[in-house]
Length: 140
Image (cartoon, rainbow, N blue to C red; front, side, top):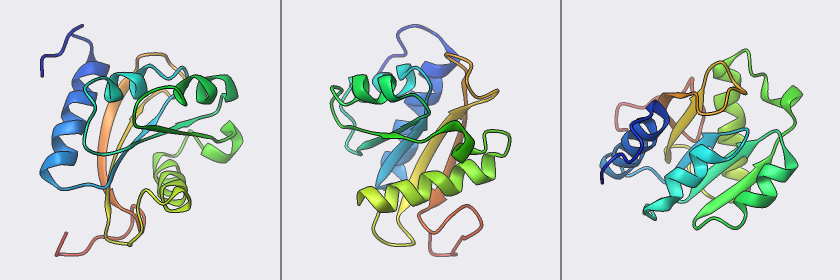
């Protein structure tokens, strides 16, 4: 698929979808404030569900109407937005809670933007197992 607007956020989402397909990830998790990144991810209806984690309830309500998006409200104080490793742990916990990943070895492709809270700043992709960012098995 073509990146329509040439933004880094669009490039990150396109790459996340391709990575998720190539590594057989169970879900794409996206930290989002306004929901644009998750909406872009759902546009072409990827095979994987999209877990959208937002500190804003209105964003979660809007995202509930997007195809394949599973929004989750998470207050900013629980996100630890100054520590990406802690944010990844939150994504794993929510993915397990929602049943989007079920095994510790299930892979998740996580996108985020730093500084967090800046609209359209998606600039990070990370592939992690559901067991968390510190776990990695040679079979993955």
